[in-house]
Image 1 (tube, rainbow, N blue to C red):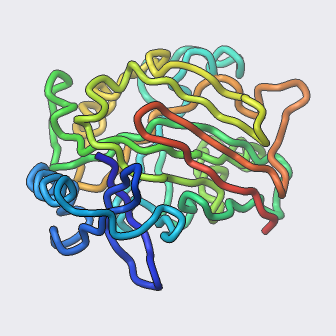
Image 2 (cartoon, helix red, strand yellow):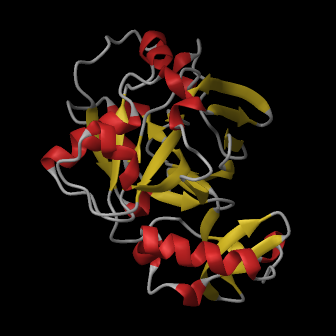
Length: 278
């Protein structure tokens, strides 16, 4: 099942994406975080299976599948291929930083190349979405705490990322990244390490890999993060990007206004955004 936040005729809604359109399930649960719980997902699935599509896909505007109060934990340097192309060393522990809600745009909206830099990069990332409270979770049980998965363009401003020992400035320019188009629930993705991921810039494939190239698996990351803080429904863990980012080319292939960025992960769909100038 593909769950999305969307807008139709000026009204925000919760929907289930199908081939024939979107089923409005707004009234089934109290709010978005409740919808991601096992009980919420079960109720939405039961309603969507018997309901006709409410809107055609081209009639709705995608919103971020991210509740404003949710946290986004990002993992850097987590694909072997990317570590090698950047001439880094394999880390002993995950490098984790946070991103703000305002640093993302939804599927179909413009992402913004900042005026402060010309080193604007793209990074496709499989992103895990928490479905129930998780603290001190054992790695063997970690996938039980997920509602599903989405796609993130972890857009990075590389020179600002390197200005100090913390990467936060280069990772949080307003609307520099994107998330969407939906959250594919775990019943559609039983093994997150068996997916393929591709990034296309203006139709040219730049990133192409399988998700089993991660250094730290999704179960490990859930267990690791839940050791130092409690995870809540709607929180996201973005799991790093593979080789083929703009910084990995010689010369670098930075994004510029007018570029079309498409990121595709099997069983989730395509996250599509145009680059605009600030």
